[in-house]
Length: 465
Image 1 (cartoon, rainbow, N blue to C red):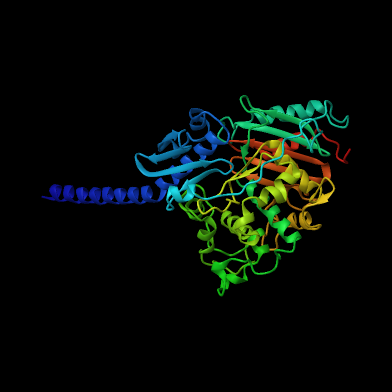
Image 2: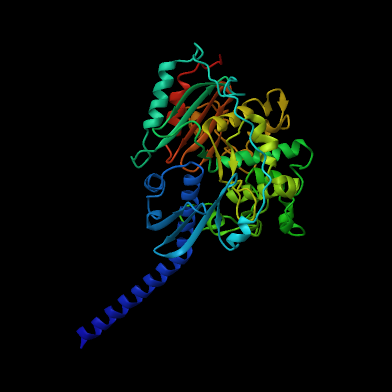
């Protein structure tokens, strides 16, 4: 009798555990599968239609890790789209539109999104015969102050570097500028200098610069309440444009790509990413705490849209900034509502990302014209008061300001004045004013940034040319 009773107890316990596992699995699938299929469809589509890569190579290099390996997909060249699902569930579709890149569909009908009209300016023809940076012609020799052997070794090391897991990091491009000139440039096999690369969160720095253009024109004020319609008459009306730029809005927003949360739901389950973020409640008082949030950058992007107006918005980033500094390859992808995804989805060639870095190295001035406010770069690379580590400015990361304590800097072997735009997977634009050096690294997985910066800087004199 006792044995039979124990068997019943064990059976009941196992039944409860099985039920809990089924419930937990169902909840996980309901929350995670749409994010997995959305990520897969969107990134496969952009890699196929913007980078013109082979789908099998994209799957192998970019999307083979768990949990994305659970997804299946179809590339439809007839309507320029990619559809993906997880075991037949949570089907997602991303569509390509010329000049706009790829957009992930959620609740809005595909017909409504395809019917949107964007007035985009044509990029001027690239002046290959003009010297860099106004054109593409690069000098045959490099300055004698540069140690060519050390620089080559640093670039070779970056191209062959492995990730923290010991796997190939797939560095696709590595570019080095010294005193404004290209002195080192390498691309992985099969990658050309004309192929655009995804910037991921480097896009935030582009968005910050576009805000700067509007501040210079007197159309926005940094310390005025951010013009967000949902916040009018609420406690969130205390959030300023500066709070958004410095990532100190106080909004309840979790930035963790390892699980379903606000950032993944925003990027892969939302048609209007700025509205999604604007609806989040306050977690603490604006300006009181630094918390890095892609949602803040998408609110900034929609502020740009509302400020310049619907008729001019689509063309504004290109006419006001990109084409004026020769970033003719640059492209911003919109969400389904038509707002550029200012947090994550920019594409450009490594040379064009380097041009953007050069704009900031030149204090916002390009070819004799001041495009950003005179004090914009200085303000952008000053740490926000809510950041205790002093490593974030206005949509740019900072190395820290400890001249005599390199161990407290993010990159101990790089100068304290280094500032950088950083993207998922180790995309990076690094500007080192004191050494007149700019580095661009594009790839699929992060590598040891401190090491490659140390090795690059070893090739240059410490006191400029």
